[in-house]
Length: 69
Image (tube, rainbow, N blue to C red; front, side, top):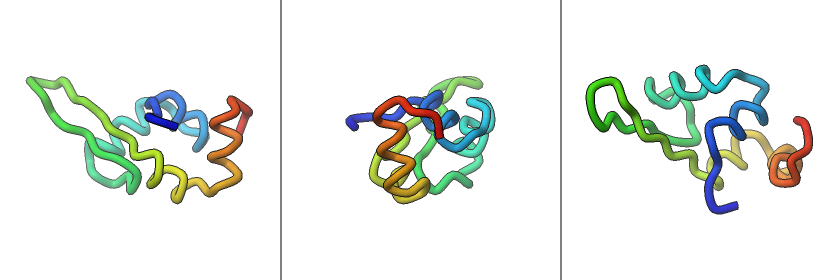
């Protein structure tokens, strides 16, 4: 997988998209980063490798296939 969206990550871990965004902004999510670009706007990057390690190989494979967690 080339990239992971906020929505995909949220669905895979059973949390809201806002939860994932705030975790990335606060630096507590071990699988990506948030970069403040201007005012209250952020860009997000979720590392596929780190996210796979975080949720496990089986859950990551299900996510890639679009299956429910």
